[in-house]
Amino acid sequence: MSTRHRCLPLSSGAGGEPWTVSDWLVAVGAAVVDLLGYTVGGPGDGRPVSLTALVLLVLAAVPLLTRRRHPLASLAGVLVLGLALNLSGPMPHHFNGTLAVALFAVARSCSLTVAAPTALVAAGVTLLGRGYPLPPPVADAASNVLAAALVVAAAEALKRWQHAGEVRRRLLADRAVVQERRRIARELHDIVAHHITTMQLMAGGARSNLGGDTEVVRDALVSLEGSGRIALREMRHLLEVLRAGDEPEEAPSAPQPGVGSLGPLVDESRRAGLPVDFAVLGAERPLPPSTGLAVFRIVQESLTNTRKHAGRAQARVRLTYHPDRITVEVSDNGTAASADSLAGALAGAAGAAGPRVGRTGYGLIGMRERVALHGGSIVAGGLDGGGFRVAATLPAAPVDEEERLG
Image (cartoon, rainbow, N blue to C red; front, side, top):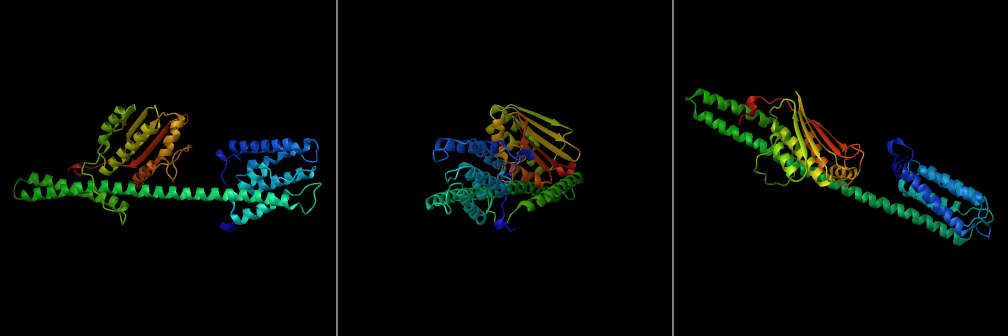
C-alpha cells in the first residue's frame, strides 16, 4: 500500500495498553450523548423507548476504544451496531455522535482518498432502517452526507494545522541547533586562539634566550609543545562544528569557564534563591578546556531551568571523576507539575528522555550537541514523584603536565 492511501494509527496506549483513559472517556461521552438524543427525541412514530435500542446505543460506542490503533475497524464496528439498531425498530435517519467520532478518527489517520469514500459509506448506512422507503428521502440523505462532509473537513483542517505546527517546531529546533553550534565554535575558537598565542609567546621567549639560560629555553619549549598539542586537539573539535555560511560574530573576550567555575556558579544559584548541594567525587585532575567548558554549560543550563520551572525546589550537583571519563549529574525535587514544565523547557523536537510532556524548549538540544561533540552520552527526564534529572558522561583522558602549561 502506498503512503498516499495508507492509514496510520493516531497513537498507542501508554505502556503498550490497547486503549487509554482518554479513549474510555470519549466512548462514554459519545454513548451518553446518543442516549440523551434517543430518549429525548424518541424513536419516532410515538413509540416508547426500547430497551434493545438503549443497549445497542451503548454497545455502538465500545468500538471507539480502538479508534486510535485501528480506526477503520472501529468505524466498521460502529456501523454494524448502528445498522443493527436501525433494523431493531423504526428509527429516524440520524448521524449520531458515536459515528461522528469514529469517522473523525478515520479522517485523522487516513488520507483524503480513503476518508471521502468511507464518509459516503457511513452516511449511506445510517439511511438503512426498518419501516423507511428506499431510496430514502432526499432531505435525510442530504443532511447525513453534509454531516459526514463536515466531520471529514474538520479532521483535514486539524491535520493541516498540526502539520504546520510540526514544521514550525522543526524549523525552530534546527535554528536552535545552528545557534548552539555557532556558540560552541566561538568558544572553541577562543580556547585554540589562547593556546596559539601562548605558543607564539613561548617561541619568542625561547628565541630571545638562545645562547643564554638553557633551562629557560627548555621550559619555553615544553610549554610550546603542550600548547600546540592542546590547540591541535581543540582545532579538530572546532572543524567538526563549523558550518559554511555562518555569519561572523564577535567572539567574547572573557576567559571561558570550566569545572573550576562551578563553585561560583553554584553560589550564584544559591543567591538567586535555589538551594544547591554541590559535591565533587573522585580524584580531581585537570581536564581539557573544551571538556571543562561542556561540563560547566550543562550545569549552568540545568540550574537555570530549575530556577525557572521547578518552583520551590532544591537542586543537587554531582561531579564525579573516573579514570577515563567524567560524569556530571544535576537533579531537583520539584513538584510533578513543575517537573512537567522543566521537562518541556529541556525537551526539544528531538524529544527528551522521560515520561513527561511540557512546553517546547531547546535547552537539551544544546547539551546534546556539546556531549555528542566529545563522544559522550546524556540522559534527561522526570523522576518518579516529581523532580527532574540531567546526567551526562564525557570522555576525559588525563591531561599531561606539559599540556597544562601556558
